[in-house]
Length: 60
Image (cartoon, rainbow, N blue to C red; front, side):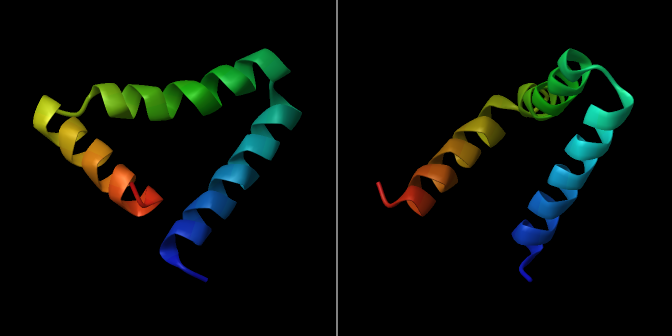
């Protein structure tokens, strides 16, 4: 199992646990808010680099 697959599986597991313990809207807020906050904390140069790498992987 690749590193990214392990991270994705962990994210799904955390999301399911949050749905059980919290109301659906709170779990959704956490699941969407954490990656958004992490992206916004990056420097502008790091954001450009992340977008460039993502586009390369998509084959653009």
